[in-house]
Every structure is written in C-alpha cells, then in structure tokens.
Image (cartoon, rainbow, N blue to C red):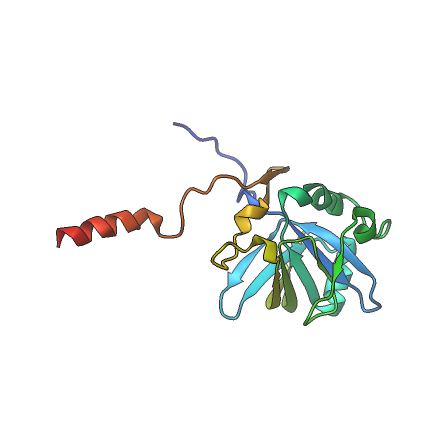
Length: 195
C-alpha cells in the first residue's frame, strides 16, 4: 500500500452540507450553502460557520450577529446546491425554491421549515483567518421536525437521508453501521460472563 504526498490542504471529508439562513437589520433575508461548519462545544452548545467576506450573506451575519444552520437532506439536494451557486443579490431564494420561512424564537433570521433540524445561533466571536472568516456562535434554540420521531419518541435523523459534501459532490448518507460504543458492547457482555 502506498500513498502520494500532496501540498497542504483541507482534505477533511465528508462534511455536512447545510443551508444557513440570515437576515439584515432591515429584514431582508438570504440563504447560503456552507460546508465549513461543525460542533465546537457541548456546554454551552456552540458551533461555527466559515464564510468568505465577499459572499452576500456575510454582511448580514456580521451586522446582526445571528444566523440559522438548517440541516439538509436528499430531498433538499437541489436547493442546497442552488443556494451555494446563486447570489441573494439576484434572487429571493426562499421564493424561487418554494421554501417556507419559519419564525425563529430567539433571533430575527428565519429558519427553513423544510429542514429536519434548524439551529438558531448567536455569534460570540469572529475570527478573520484568511480566505474565510469564522463565526463562532452559541446555539440558542433548536427546531426538530416531528415526522422524524420514531415510535419511542426518539429523533431519527437517518430517516431524512442527511446530505454531506465531499470533493465537489453531494451524497445522501446510507447504511447505519453501528451505534456509539458498539465496538465494545459485545466484548463487555462476554467479559461479564467470564466472571
């Protein structure tokens, strides 16, 4: 087995492909597609998005210090791509794509009703890192679609076929291979029998 040596680059794939909704201080809103996002803290719940300053939504987020991360699905793949390749300067993406503006509880930016999970976020810090500026934010409210609740009342996002981004392509997540800790559960049971 051999590996090629490449120049430094971001090869951390796949990534979540999310639609981020934002609004300016006058209430004009937009949706931008982001793959540079993730979890950074559990308590308090914190996340981040990294955005190029030249993107239309950048000034909205910078001014209001608010945004919503809307998770995407196989069904939202077209909308996810469209929101990443068109500018809010030219088109109202909610109207064009037939997406519904949800009324957020803690912030002014709308969430996307068709998204299975929407995270309302308030920016706590901006890091100007280079090509992208990172918005660190606290999650202040979460909206989860009831249609993805299983019989026990547990939220099952896998039923929505979440979307991920890898090397320029969008992929729906498929087969579940295990649950957290499954690699040692069998071993523990066997070890318990020996005692």
